[in-house]
Image (tube, rainbow, N blue to C red; front, side, top):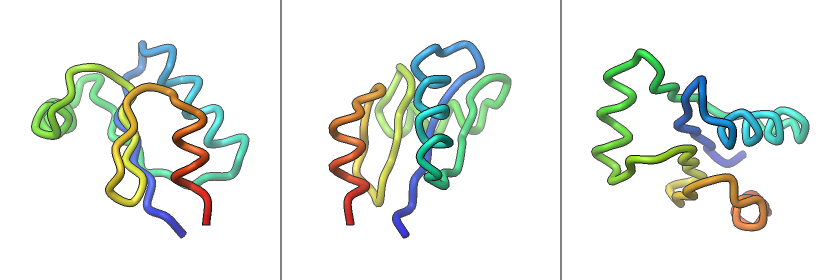
Amino acid sequence: MKKVEVFSSDTCKQCIELKKYLKENNIYYIEHNISGNDENRKRLIKLGYMSLPVMIIDGNHVLGFDKTRIESLLED
């Protein structure tokens, strides 16, 4: 199983859609919500990002809800 992490916030519409997509497709992920969490925000910035969502699939970064790239990276 691939390791999937999602950096998100409570007010990001793309984040909400991404998490809905992952849930509907039974894809387990670890969420790093930056809303009110300075440590997660610092980790996101350290990765070089200032916008959301950011998804990491086995070390491959995806900025935004790019369904085509996500599906490609999740293929076995």
